[in-house]
Image (cartoon, rainbow, N blue to C red; front, side):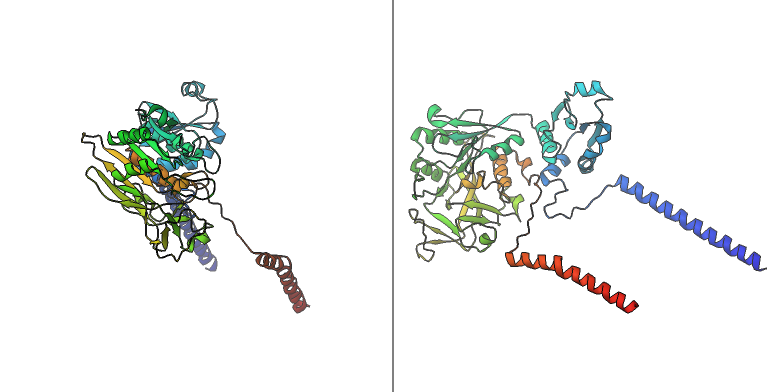
Length: 458
């Protein structure tokens, strides 16, 4: 009787265990199937390092036809590209990923012009573009080049002390030029005094902080270009008269901007916000974290930008020009008209109180259908120089402004971010405390606890 009861119990427990095992296996199978069909992930990093940017999502989700990303590499190295390429496929059902081993399919690799392993080709319709790198920046750039059929050229004015695009120093614009190249812009320098006209192939004219006066033929060339439907990004510094590097008033050019409803003031904005000290910048760098609703800055909300040696702007709409403020300095800022002394009296009653407009964007009614002139005026030029362009949202602002001027609003957003460099800064006393705790206190505590256990057991 006891034997039969024991066997019955064993059979019952065996059945339970079998059912439990089958349920677990079925649950694992269902979870794997769902995970394979609905690949979701959560990026908890501070700057969303492992997520595709808003610009990439905007470009990929806006596809009107199928796109194929063909990745050419050795089969054993396909996994190196899976994480990145799968994110593109997850954004849209129109994106298809193809992995090709050039050694096994040499004809296909030859037709695609593949010379190196680890190359990606993005094809949309009949157009193919090679990604310049196996990064989000490179692949999204290939998507943009596929979608943008026309060539866009950014022309930088030169000859009057402007920032130069071939200068890799602190004040140069070589990084700005490189960013535009990655956005599928061609770049070149033009001397308006030699030709007295803006070349017709210039999609956007960029005037980057002239230190000398523009002659009347140059001003007339800029005026005719914009008022005939051209696009211009104008960055004008305050006319400082300190030391050897003086900036001229540029009266003729300032008068032209005034005709467009934007009057640069002869002042220097000082930001007294203590946040500047925490970020390692002084009062001559104006920090901005609040923006208007214009397309150039609407995507920058929650992102700070900085403008060294900025001047304020006065905005006033005219008959044909309609300017709009983009952003202003904080309420804790002020502007001094003392531009010939390195020392500034913050208590001077003549100082203008903030907030003060720093940048504006506007349109010019040419009277022609589908031929609207556009301009962006910023009261600083150093914010786009090599030394300050990487500061927070400065690079996004620069590219957004050029894209808006070029009527490429679909590309305005936050670009792929470089990995954060997070450093822990400690004083000498803090460093000594950490060393004492890690090298002496913790080891001594372990020895003491070990001795206590041994003593109790003894």
